[in-house]
Image (cartoon, rainbow, N blue to C red; front, side, top):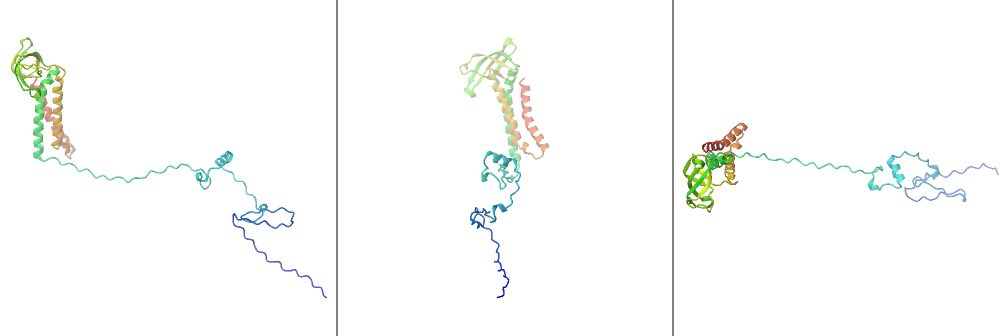
Length: 271
């Protein structure tokens, strides 16, 4: 028989092995020699461990080196995706929409009849308080004449007490008949009772028998009520509610000047 050359059998078709999925167990590779140790392979690529090139070490930041030297890493809840630690970031305050306020409506001034009635009433009250405060004011200022008053008659009691008498100045400088006596004690209202008193002068109409510290309350309270009447005139007549600033200043000035002039007039009359 003619010897034919041996024809090599066609090699089996090689198929590319699919890499094992990540984390899946990889079967150990067949060993050429049963005495050889098993070959370790990469679970992701299926290639031997020795065939995978080693990576170049990357320079770590200082905080990573400190964390590694400290013996541990921060929990994943305390770091970002790249390993940087979380920091407390300031939360922006909620912006509230501006509150719209409706403009205040100006209060209209009172009607002329009401304003005129308020003006007359408060002016009369200011005149009364200025009249009863003029004499005590001069007495507190030292403009007075000492003497003795003899009670001739008294009626009423408390705040409604009314007494009259005869005042004789010290040194017989003058004598005033039928003057009103203010500040008579409750137990000394009998007719003929003699009391030390003071008057502003021979033309005065009131002898003040109260010489203690309470005498200052008469003129302080009276002048305070005069100032209150002046403020009421400026308020209730509409002077402070005028729209024009210049007119408002003039109106308020006139409202305050009226009671002030009345007070000055009574002080001059009681001198």
